[in-house]
Image 1 (spheres, one colour):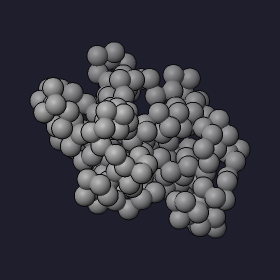
Image 2 (cartoon, rainbow, N blue to C red; image 1 turned 180 degrees about the horizontal axis):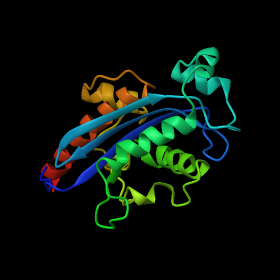
Image 3 (cartoon, rainbow, N blue to C red; image 1 turned 180 degrees about the vertical axis):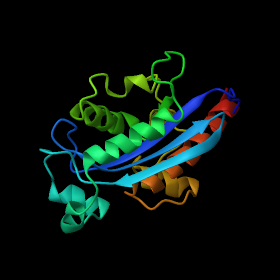
Image 4 (tube, one colour; image 1 turned 120 degrees about the vertical axis):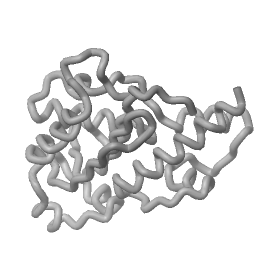
Length: 196
């Protein structure tokens, strides 16, 4: 995979209190900043959902989050400020040419939560100051391969796909998910390059 020395990729994954970005909140955010193919910094924080966010007990079970422990975590606003510092170290938000490619598995889900989180904390521009919206996501390509008969899995959940590719994963931990996604995307892109 040929990469420009200047290309930036923001891999990220969220654990949330439900499935609706308009109602539920983020309780873990993990991100990797990749520049020129190298991870230059990792971000990983577990925190309380933003004020007013609904909490689905089933969602907490999926991520293995204890409701009492959740109450003791750092605030959503403090975590938001820490994440901005992480982004600002690598992206010049006022420079239209300096934006990262957003990357993840089924990344539109996480992007909707991240954008809502930014807006909840008063950022009217959402995440647009930091990313270019040209999403990198292995899932759509895997679905194309399924359609073409190149691959056939019982489902395309991240855990199922990682098992098929022999990639280690501690499912529903945001950092583990995004590290596995980065490895998976690299393999998928190399396979696709060979097909072309």
